[in-house]
Length: 119
View 1 (cartoon, rainbow, N blue to C red):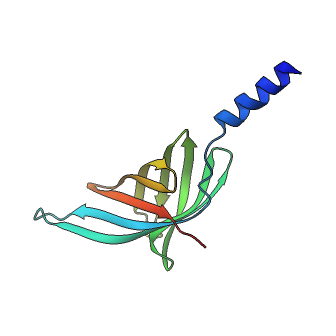
View 2 (view 1 turned 45 degrees about the vertical axis):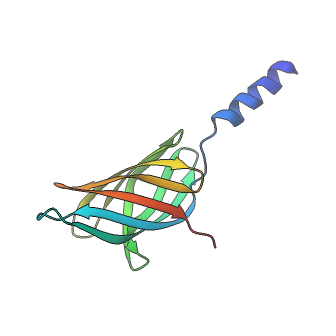
């Protein structure tokens, strides 16, 4: 009985956070002239165990499918691809109902700040 309870507690302690839902916020990038540009960002995520699927983009009408996604602890890694073949690599750190991190596409890099959308 003691071993079963210890096993249950260990399982609960190592279960990943659930990121299913809509996350919106901002994407801040740098233009070639050095000035900063800010855009909207929206991630629509589904999670099963440590696997994350869904879409990423700038709005509801601008979404690209996640081709690979995972969560390990509070670290999230997503890869997505647009219909024209543009690839995105996203690395985020989850803290409560906020995620912060980077997005890279080709030679361009930006900073993401997202909050879980209350629905």
